[in-house]
Image (cartoon, rainbow, N blue to C red; front, side, top):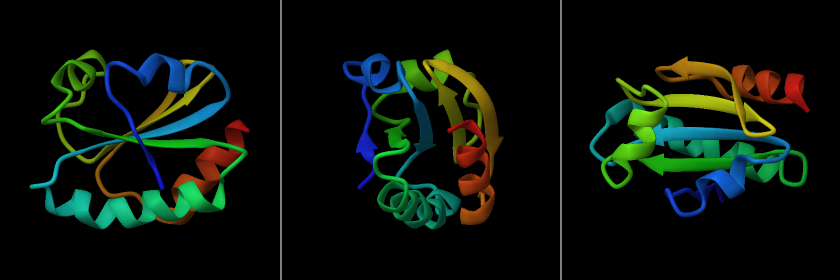
Length: 103
């Protein structure tokens, strides 16, 4: 399962290694299609990358901090720094390739 990220655990979760963060909301149609892909990746890449998700309705500060204007937005972090930002629905293969390119 993808880790639920909040302002309380966010920095600790992304500070080392590779982390993919999905910014989403329950009312967002494309987010509902993205979420199963994110969950599959969290299982497949367990141990090599962290997969997290942030509900923008519950964590508006984090969404604002990273300039999330539309969702889904996926941001790939390496050792605490953003290295890639993808807006809109992303395929599993595209996400997996980007993550593996940073591992």
